[in-house]
Image 1: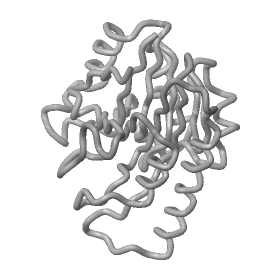
Image 2: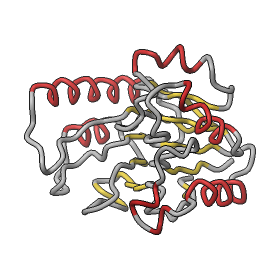
Image 3: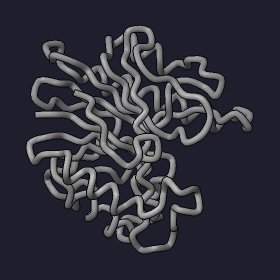
Image 4: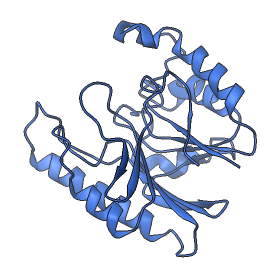
Length: 227
């Protein structure tokens, strides 16, 4: 069993949001993801999807994109991204019931796959061009609580711990934020994150945690092996 990861697929199979407007790397990106995924991932593997799965605003509209994900090999574990408006956090349980058994919506919770603990939530950070607001503080505290809860649910006897965040646990200046403190307090081994398409990012061993940026464009539409 292998664990792979990819994020920020920004699917829009309805054709409403062509991604090649953002550069050549996005040309025919859905078909390239399908080809790379299908030739790499086996049915017994697991794929971590760290947010921004579909551009659609409502679940019914996102069906084509979710069916695309469902058709790929392996077990799929998804967290919310900042563009996943189709997935309201309070509707997670209701949406989960409409998905195949091999697709799990992970929202501030944890599960164990082949002895490996996995927890995840969207996360939050204030982008460089913005000033923090009371709303930012509220979301930050909520997401910190989700991460804390999820990591606390991982049993102590797992062989490794993986945390999934959509937003990275650092600011635009690559300075760590409070999410980093929680990751380290729970002895996380691997952090999988997305969201970063331009600008600086952190990769490799940071404070004893293996950071992995898994945005589809960064990976050239190829799921990366995590374990």
